[in-house]
Image (cartoon, rainbow over all chains, first blue to last red):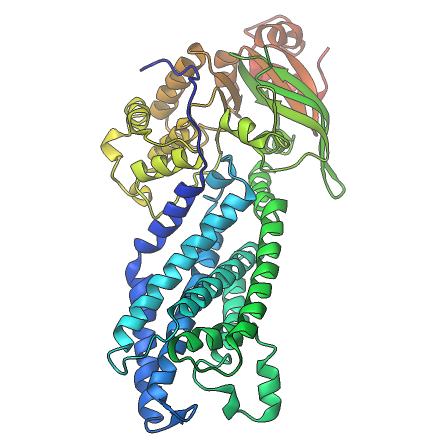
Length: 272
Length: 250
């Protein structure tokens, strides 16, 4: 064996490796993380597209065409959330998060790696849903840049929310509650399946308090050039929401809330 | 020359529980140092603070001159920690695990070193096996390999032989002793006191968050070993430990 005396090593950032690990983690279970959500989106399209066949939205769009961007964005958002939240809680519960915490990674590198991996998974699933559902009603791509901006910001927001949920939850049950009682209703009631103009006035007002509505509406504007509200207004609100959830996630990571203290709790459990 | 580990007036409390109480300790480079104490004495809390997994309520700690909080990158690059629990990532193989661990420290193209560590720990044959498929002993070896992958000059082993068979214990100690001879500083916590007696040049004993004994192993045996034996029979570290912890020490 060679001498193990420390030799000068070239140290870079650990961020690219953590990003690669997070991407490889979901890639290794691609049936569960990519294929399954694509199938779910197809089922939504087949059922709702069939039931609401002949209905028009904005007076010019078939319901199926209207639905496709919503399903794509819903898949992007839900899978971005699932990536960060499931990775964190699994690592916390099995204890292997300690390997990342022992490394010289800053809280910002940690955040960026997890969120970018979440964006990547969200976009991969979104592209899968789009590729399959577009056969039913090829949608226009009027403003592709808006599509990219809202897809990125939406996935980054949900990735950040996944970090917050993964940090907060101590067990899978709590994470499932976060997902089923907050993320799922907010997504489903955001205008994926309908234009909010079809709602009663009260529910239209309520919808404006749901930040997911602006993500879906801005994303859909990129496809058709038509939306419930101005894409600039949506962008401003989504950007503000992104800043807020990112700041919360970064603060929790910086403090090591339920992460470093969680590892400590595990160690102390063994110690006592 | 900076101390390998310097701990100055560290205190740590969890609510009303005082886990560490004004602990100061200096471990020189190249030492094989034992940190002993009963469960709950504060050993793991002290290791957590050195590794950046916990923050001290008071005091400072540094690894080779790098403060573990204000200069955490440098401190962590110079420290390898083998955790007590058999934790692993079930998604990856042994080689992937070690490559990722190397990458977390920002070290690329480290395959030659990874191969060498695996060869020394008899892991080469399991390089492409998923971590889930390994026995407990093999997982323990991977934990040691993960701690060494960034070539840290200071290595902390927290109960590395807990639940490990005799063969692995012996091969592990041979390997760790070789690392120490090559200049690495080793800090060991263990409940196997015969191991500590053979391996450690100096020992600190913690009790209820305080250091109650700190000396060379030989001096501890001379000073405290005879209390129970009354000069008869061979004194060992277990006698010393029992005497000190029970307050019978001179």
